[in-house]
Amino acid sequence: MEPPDARAPRLLLLALLLAAHPGAQAEVHLSVQPLVEVMRGELVTLDCTPLEAHDHFVLEWFLTDRSGARHLLASAELQGSELQGTVHDARGRSPPYQLDSQGRLMLPKAQVGDERDYICVVRAGAAGTAEATVRLRVFAKPETIEVSPNKGTLSVMEDSAQEIATCNSRNGNPVPQITWYRDGQRLEVPMEMNPEGYMTSRTVREASGLLSLTSTLYLRLRKSDRDSSFHCTVRYSMPSLQHNHLDSPTFRLTLHYPTEHVQFWLGSPATTAGWVREGDSVQLLCQGDGSPSPEYTFFRFQDKEEKVLNTNLEGNLTLVGVQRGQSGTYGCRVEDYDAADDAQLSQTLELHVAYLDPLELSAREELSLPLNSSTAVNCSVRGLPTPTLRWTKNSVPLGDGPVLPLSSVTFDSAGTYICEASMPTIPLLSRTRSFELLVQGPPELRAEEIESKAEGGWKEGDEVNLICSARGYPEPKLSWSQLGGSPAAPVPGRQGWVSSSLTLKVTSALSQGGIFCEASNPHGNTRHVFHFGTVAPQTTQVGVAVMAVAVSVGLLLLVVAAFYCMRRKGRPGCCRREEKGAPPSREPELSHSGSERPEQAGLLMGGASGGARGGSGGFGDEC
Image (cartoon, rainbow, N blue to C red; front, top):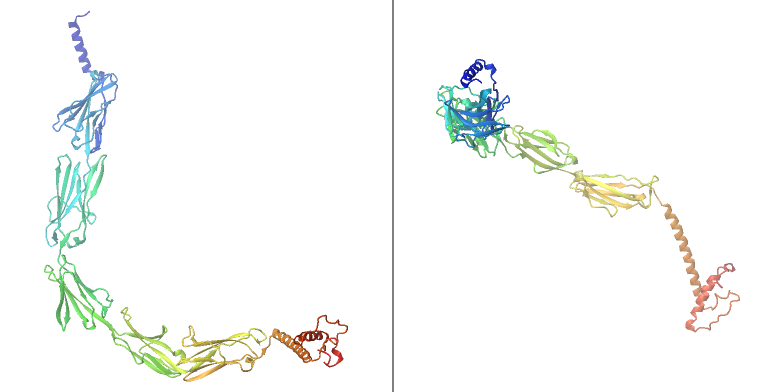
C-alpha cells in the first residue's frame, strides 16, 4: 500500500485533468420562464426545475435589488425523494413569500413592488451548478378617468393657446398614455409650447407604487369650436402585449365671440307671406350669432322715425292681440361692441295684419218672394288682403262673387243661402252670413196613386191607405172628404213638404163619387180625387144574405101561427078537435084562473098537427 503522501499528487493530477476537460463533467440544466406577467392582486408562481435527475441538489431563490445585490429569499434541498424547503427572508412582504413542494417560489397577491428579477440557483454537487433569472412584471388597470374642463368663458379673439382641460389617470402600472380628441378626431399636439396648441404631462408615483398621470391640453380656439365636443382617452398595457383604454365624458366649452350676422323673423302663427290675423298674438324673434348672448333692441318705424319698443337678452318680443293699425316696418338691432366694423347688426321686416269685417247682405234674415218672381241679393265685405266671396245652399256651391241672382223662383228655390268670405293665403280667417228664402204661392199637391190588391179590381171590404203631400208658403193645410185623416206632418228628406194619410175600407159608394184630399193656404187651394172604378161585392157576403132572408121568413111564419091560436082562446078544444081517439085527460078541470094551461097545450098540439091538414082550406079549424 502506498503511503498517503504518495497518493496526494495523483488526486491533484486527476482534478487538473478533469478541469482541463469540462466535457467530462456532469452538467445542470434548468427549466425557467424568463418573463412572467400578472395583474395586480393575482397569485404569482415562479418555477425553476432541473431537467436532469439528480440524487441530491440544493435550490435557492434570490431577489436582486436595484443596486444589483442578491438577497436569499428561500431554499430547498432534495433529501431522498422529498424536497425540503425553507423561507429565509420575507423582506417585509405581506403576505410573505412561499415555497411549494416542487421548489416553486409563490407570491400571493402580486404587488407593484414585486416587479424585480428573481434568480434561481441549483447546486447539484459534482454535477455542477446552474442559475437562471425570472423577470416579473405586474400590471395595474388605472382607476376611472377624470377630466376637468375649463369652466370659464374663453375668447376666440386671443392669439395664443388657452388651457382647455386637465385629464387625470390614477393608480396604474405601467404608466399609461393620454390622448385628446375633438369631435371624435385625435388631436395631434406637441409636448412643447406652441401658439396653436400643445399639451403637458406629469407622472407621479404613489405610495402604493402605482403611477398617476396628469395631462393638460392647450389650444387656440376658433368660433367653429362653439359646437365642438372634447374628451380624453387613457390607454394602458395588459399582460401578453394586450392594451385597453378608458374614455372620459365629453364636454363643451363656453366661448366668447363677437356677432357677425343677425336673423330677424316672425314666429307662429305668421304665414309665409308675413300675414298675421287681427287679434292674434305674434312673436318677433331675433338672433345673433355672437356669444355670450348680446342685448337685443326692438323698434318700429313710424313716420320714418325709429321708435324703440323693447330691449332684452332673450331676443323675442310678443305683440299681444295685434290690430290692423299695427301693420308696418319692425326692426331688431344687436348691441355687440366687440363686433367688427363691417358686421351687419340690424335687420328689419314688414308686418301685415290681415282683417275681415262682418259681412253685410242687401236682404234681411228672411226674404219672402212670390212664386215665379226674380230678384238679386248683394253680399259686401271689407278685408285685407282682398277676400273671396262664395255663395252656397245646402253645402252646394252656387257661384263666386258678391251678387246672387234669383230668377223665376220656385218652391225648390226656398231654403238657406250662405255667403262666405275667405282668404286662401290666411288659414282660419273667414266669415259667413246667411238668409232664409221663403217662396209664397198656392199649394202644390201630390198624391200617391192607388192600385187594387186583386187583378179583378176593387172589392167591397178591401182596405186602402191614401196619402197626399203638399207644399207652399204659408204652409198648406191638408183635409179629406171623409173623417179619419192623419194630421199633416213634415216629409223626411223633402224640405217644405207636408203629408197626410187616410186609411179606409172600400165600399160600393166609393165607386160613384170617389174620395178627395184638399190642400189650401191664403193664396189658394187644390184637390185631388181618388177614383176606385167598379167595386164588386164579395162572394161570401151573397151567401150570408140568402141565409139571412130564409131565417127571417121562417120566424115570420111562426109568429103568425102563434097569433092565430091566441085569437081562438074563446073556443075550447079548437086545436084538439082534429085529434081523433085522443084519450081524455086524467087531470080534473082547473079553475078559471088555471084554464089557460090546457088551451096553451092545445095550441101546441094543434100547431103540431096543422101541417097534416093544410089542404082542408082556411084556418077555421086549425091553429
